[in-house]
Length: 209
Image (cartoon, rainbow, N blue to C red):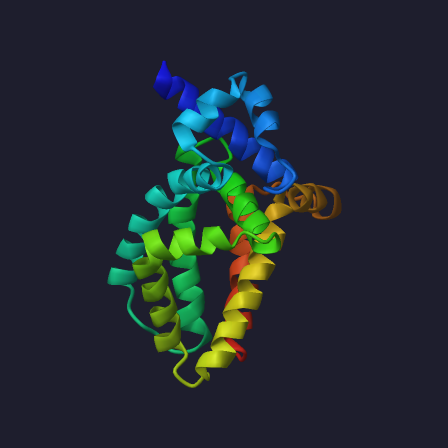
């Protein structure tokens, strides 16, 4: 029973955080949506910050070990081809997040987007404390593909690329509707991501080579 209650709270919080944002979602709104009392939330999570972190942890715990495997096996290629190859190799792990919840990949990116646009400094600390090794390996791999790019400049490019990705994926439902209306094309979240890969890759690279 306690496990079911905890899962209900996580599912409710995840849905509301993705729809409304972290700051705009109160604990009382979550309890009403999950049909539990506030004491249950406090018992299982202790605080709103911890609840936010636990919502994302469900996804990161599935995603990061797969990223580690991809990075360990990745063969470095320099330039845009190397970056695009790396980005494409990360798509399949992203799609496994649908195991957590239906449309899990889309929900995860929406949650990341909320953390990206709202002031949630504790999320960065949580990610780096728990998954910092994977993040560092990813950044190191990108740098090996682009040894000609200054470290500060590369950091800016990755920041802007992440912003483009998060914004586009958070609007994925609108993008699928646009594709249907304007191009007569039926696309899913994976198709949207694959369309994004060359754009993000060239943005990080800064030149085509």
